[in-house]
Length: 432
Image (tube, rainbow, N blue to C red):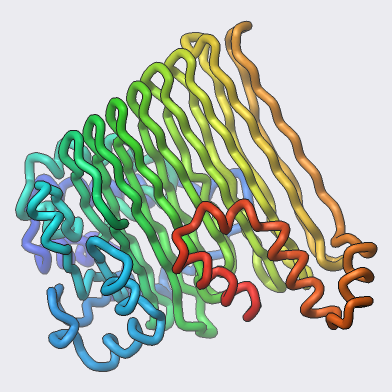
């Protein structure tokens, strides 16, 4: 399905057997997409929309791995996804190309009244709840790629955690692209009700091809009063993927939202996880790394909008640039007039592993009252020659010495990851 027109959108909606309001929403989003230009900030986006396969379904949504085709099952097995499900997780959603191909939750989810479904299934099984939270935080016409997601969304997760509920283990979604020049447009909605807690893990990988693919996801998270949500991502897209994602959370009184965001792969990434701190004493945290190598532009960061009084935010951004790559921090922190006695802190650290790489810190920070505090610290430096020589004097070769220094540089980030993802991050950094 490479022709991006109204017929394609109607066909997708018909295949999914969607209600009329969703088809109308898709067509309205497509109309906005055609009118909107690329963002006027960040990397240049040179996407040939005529070359992308916008929808590819491979199999049905299964609840047992034995029913998934052998090739796909072996792919997820080799990625460690199946083993992680059995050992560490309360439930998983695995998306392959355009659709979820495997979804399963442990018995505790049903016992505690948790809703954990693919977004397509949630639209069918909980239409009123889905419609209540869909397209509220991230509007379809915010930018060209939220509009494209609105027109073509497929897959993703829908999660509702009832009041005063805590899960023993995280939930996870894993997104895989294998086809050449594929577009993937998942839509994820998470509601953590009052007094509840959720840890959610997201993994992303793709097969490498000569033609560019496009990943344009949208995530909307609602953290209610006294609730907590931790959203951990390790992105390892191949070097031909444009990764253009909009992630946003709204946080109620005394709620906590934590973004843990790892950006390792892709050709171009533009991603800025956001928190709207609406309730008094709400807290938003973001800790991230971006490791850009040759041919990569990673433009990432975070946004914190303080509305409630006594709110707090903390952004820690670690960037690594090597072999001519570009790793930028771009972020916004805004303390509104109503957010009295609030605090915001931003810390951006970058290390350069050669003379050809690029890194910029591009903040927009503003405070609209006199009782609040905003601090921003940024450092850019080359890898320490003294430390490098010291390690090499102990018999460690230069490559492994640099690896050790990089691992030390991102130690704070690794501590925030679930154990199995920290191990995976170590492996990925050694490979690149």
